[in-house]
Length: 309
Image (cartoon, rainbow, N blue to C red):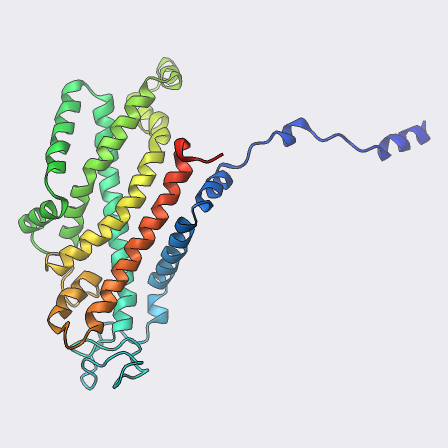
């Protein structure tokens, strides 16, 4: 019996059927489809680099962003004649280091864009769920109001809101959030109405789930895919619109090192000192382009129609 039991222990065990048929982790599958879009991967890398620069700004800044060096006004970049490696990207009209201001500008632009999308998405998702679950009169009133907002050009509407509230960073953020809120309202309403006809919602109602639970816990998680894509693509537009408001003097006010405000301060020196205009413009261009490239990745990864077998 002992010899027989030892022989049985030497025999290889058959693999379990459950482990062989185990599906891939959702995050691994999401990354697989995301990584198929090489442009999205490049955009994600650039965006992560910008976020790292924004977080480490107090550590990597060569000079304080508000420090004025009166002996170094409009110094060109280090590779230009008259430039100095003390100021790698030169200085502005009152002697502030351009590189330090660009680094801190990344903090403002990225944080502002993120907060604007959070505000607009929170309000838009709430109104969209109300329009989908409440009676038709509430749905009609909300959607007609959103149609009116969408009928006005986004930057013009933001200017009107800021003109009413007064110029300033927080007022500009609120104005841009109002501009992008209708997109989230329409997406949430359409996705929620589609989910309401499915069996799991009916089962939750039969089980006694209340209206708040149906809206937030049962239906909303299944509506998140298009909302994530919209938030990603709206992020770049929010950064661009906030820079535009800063350029027009309605957003962040001097001496805040926000890229749009830096462009506004430097526009009269565009012929004398190209670097004070070029570098903030390039920073806005690279940021918006990276976010747009990265935004194509979630669209391909979350939309079943776009997934390649």
